Structures are given as structure tokens and as C-alpha cells.
Amino acid sequence: MTAQIIDGKAIAKECRKALKGRVKEFSEQYGHAPGLGVILVGEDPASAVYVRNKEKACARAGIASFHHDLPITATQEQVAKIIDEMNADSRVHGILLQLPLPKGLDEQAMLARIHPDKDADGFHPINAGYLAVGKDGYVPCTPKGVMTLIASTGQPIEGAHAVVIGRSNIVGKPQAQLLLQKNATVTICHSRTKNLAEVVGLGDIVVAAVGRPEMVKGEWIKKGAVVIDVGINRRDDGTLCGDVEFETAKERAGWITPVPGGVGPMTIAMLLENTLEGAIRAATR
Ligand code: GUN
View 1 (cartoon, rainbow, N blue to C red):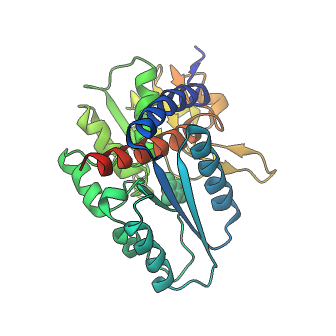
View 2: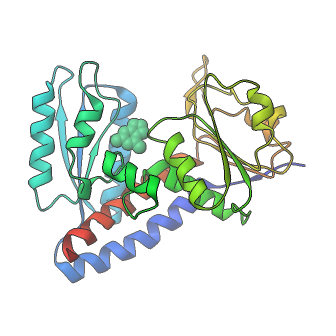
């Protein structure tokens, strides 16, 4: 059996199209566009590309973006000052502090400084807590996009065994919470998990978010499973690959996301959605 490819690029395009219509309606109704504040600290080339792509997507959707670059030498106080300014700026409805921050800056402290109502990434502890207790709040963009990709397969989540590989605050933990909310039986795996191959083999749904090239082997995958690959890694020869060994996994999976063109485009679409949500919150408060 060869898996059906989940076309994240096409699904994200549909999401962005729908969102553009909602942004237009919002802007006409309230007389201003939703706005995203973007803070980039340092010169990490991958982060610079992500930020540029996010800002381009904002412009196409009719969302204003307000960009602030800080040097790699920026102090905690300087980053905090920009966050405070964006918290107070009524044109900014969502704030994105691009991670990772340069060494020496306290990431958690900076994320907690973002006003929870403007937390477009859903990384503030209040929003993480809301997700954990099942209360409405901002949901982190990548796991939110993954839920849309899983839904696109038409496969049930309720009662399914979902295996999440990776336990980061950005993907693994919120992903597990979202799957649990949909009544999946959820297993979270990580670097200390014993018999990883066996555990992954139980998954009707597998979400790989470890950041290690092709570490999830195709032969581990249960026949017919939905496989979502969050990883985006560079092989030694410079080509891109995911966390899953795609060529072998697609011979066992029922559905699988490609890398690139799977999860990545969805993350950006969900960021736009969260920014609009922030604008609606501010306008209707
Ligand atoms: N770095 C890698 N992924 C993300 C993300 O989703 N949001 C932010 N702010 N930084 C990231």
C-alpha cells in the first residue's frame, strides 16, 4: 500500500483564502486591519527566513505587520522594552517573539511578558494552562495546524491511539493536549523512551516532532496509520528531510505529510488565524 500524501501546501492555501475574506470583513467593520508585531533577536538565518515568510503571508492576507529587529547582543531589558511597547500598541493584536532567542536571554521570562491577550503563538503560561484545562485560549500554531491536517484525512481521532514523539512546549506538549481533547489515547515519547519502535508501532496517528533527520523509521509505522512529520532538517548533502524516513514510511502509512510542503505552511496559516482572533478579541472586548 502506498500512502496518500497530505498536501499541507494546498490545505494551507485554502485556510489562507478563507482567512483573507474574514480579515477583509473585519477591516471593513472596524476600520483597521489586524496587526502582528514581530520581534527578531539576533541573526539566526533560519529564523530570519521564517520571520520573512510570516510577514509576507500577513501582507497577502491583509494583516499589518510591525517588525522589530534587535542585535544578538540585546539585553533582557531591551527585549522586554519592545514587548512592553507592543503590549501597549493598539495597532498590534498579536505578538510573535521568534525563537530560539540568543543564549543568555531568558526565553520563558520573555514569553511570559507578552500580554496573554496578544499571545499569537500561544506560548504564554496562561494560554498553555487554558489548553491543559480545556478552556478557550490561544493554541500554538504548529499543533493547531497538525489537527487540521489530521482532520483532512477523515480518519477518526476519538478512540485512536495517537503517538506524539517529542515533548517541547512549542509542539509535543500542546499537540498531546489537543489530541487528548479529541478523545485520542495519547502516548508521548521522548529521548528516554524505551522500545521507541514498538511504541510508535501502536500509533493509529503518529506526530513526529523531534528535530532529528529521519529518526522515525518507516518499518516502525503501523499499516494504514496517519503520519504527520513536523521535522524540517537538513541532511549532510544540504537537502531537506523530516523526522520520518519518508520513502519507507509511505509504503506502510495510510496518509503521510511530505517535507517540505506538509506542516510548515500550516503553521503560518494558523499564525494569521490567531492574529485575527486577537484583533477580534480587542475589538469586541
Ligand atoms: N521557532 C520555531 N517555531 C516557532 C514558532 O512557532 N513560533 C516562534 N515564535 N518561534 C518559533
